[in-house]
Image 1: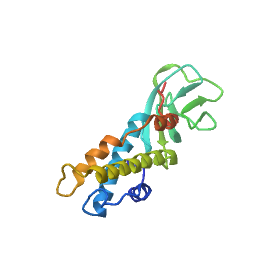
Image 2: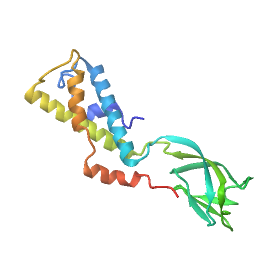
Image 3: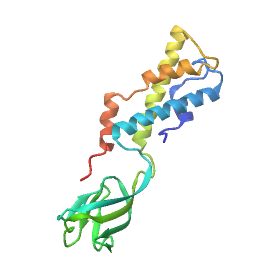
Image 4: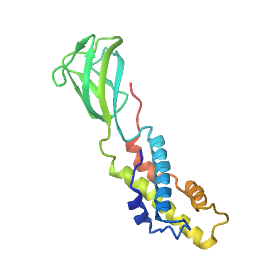
Length: 193
């Protein structure tokens, strides 16, 4: 999944295909999309999640307590929850928070192995604007840095389309900075119970 828009990122960077010595605007868009993918993957790895929507079924052990945490969040919707073979009703038998805490109403989850099965949807229906902004900022800044380096030094070697030199330099400079990881910390996945 790519977080960000190539055209918007190029516009933010102020770079043209000529400033990177690329063949045309299509090559610049292709290059930008590729680097957006790379930075999106860095963000996913750092946060230990992606920002797509997923449906999953978990089989859990009853805890003997009134709550347990789902492995994934934010929770969009519980499709079905079965405990000890009985289908439970959300709002009557249990409640679930967006953060993935499932609470039994009026009782506890019977302590047993693999006695709870939950099918639910989790993730982000829209990628958070903060994540998109960080991804686009990194790539726009990297494009600008590479364009300045090309203008100052020229290209030391070039493929036929100019793509490989620009991509290799962009890959080196398109990295998450500490101030960006500090912002992304609120999206980092914490372990399930």
